Length: 401
Image (cartoon, rainbow, N blue to C red; front, side, top):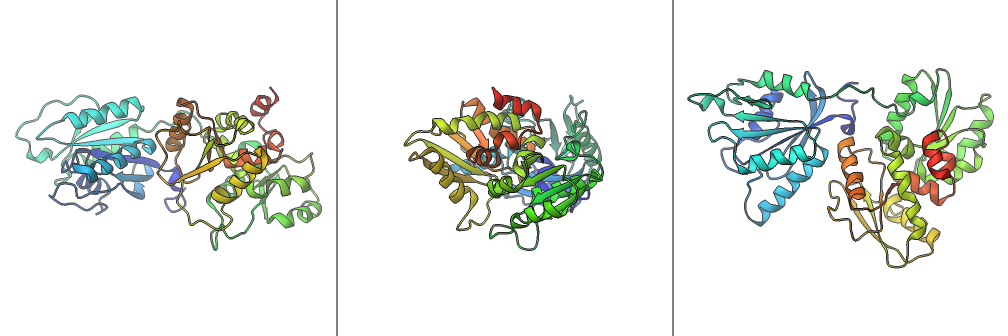
């Protein structure tokens, strides 16, 4: 898959951390051989995390995240540090950039402990090595680099590549559920929330996965589904729908045709399905005054019938008959303290990498707060969850208990 076609959520996320003026931005520019980050001798030039998607050989498509210095000062500095720490939640590989002349300090040691506690592979980059009068033999995970002379940059790239674990075959979105020549019908509503001129990311990725399985993808709008199924002349192997029209699609899809949603498929793809299905049972225990957090991974323009802020709150209150308090979050903002909430309802997380989505689910589980995603919740509220996970026997058995 090329750089241009690789979604951000699928790229390896490399976080660059360290103190102000250690040369983080200079190291990024040396690594990429581009002026990705602004370089200045003034401390604190990088004020917010900055992400850049690019190709970094021998790794391939990556997202590099430059962060503010962890020794920033003052009230504003504290906010910047908080933003930098949040980047750890989506970091696949961490680079700690330290001044080779000054050596590793307490802030650097704090970062190393953060990497270890979060099981993030890391490399300590001792930058400004060209200024050293003498050198010592470095332990594992440390390397001398000069962003000025480019010394050690090639070796650093090689070490980065060694941090990527590829022992397990990657889960398919749908390819492992279908066979060559199968027909797969995808139901894609085109409404106000749909991006102009293109399909949303999960739809694009699912179509690509179907084609790679040598099967046939048939894309229709919800009101075209019944006629399409009638005219096909061959029973489709699977119908995949957008969650917003789940009930309408289920009503016209014969029971002997498997049915699921993009949201459910992607929860399985990212290894989250069982955790999210467990959380849905909490819905019926909600009471008046309970708070529910609805969280989205991206910060999109809200429409008048927005799924997260309008439709789901309406369906949830309609199902429970309770006066539930709804709060929302979006983008990188995900509350550290989830104790005020009875449950978390999260979007499919198509713009989040697996690391960050795993963090959010683990955060909820660690605080004993049930978490579910949009597709699973909608299927449950509309009484079709069992049918929508029937193609996954282990998950189906969970609901049978």
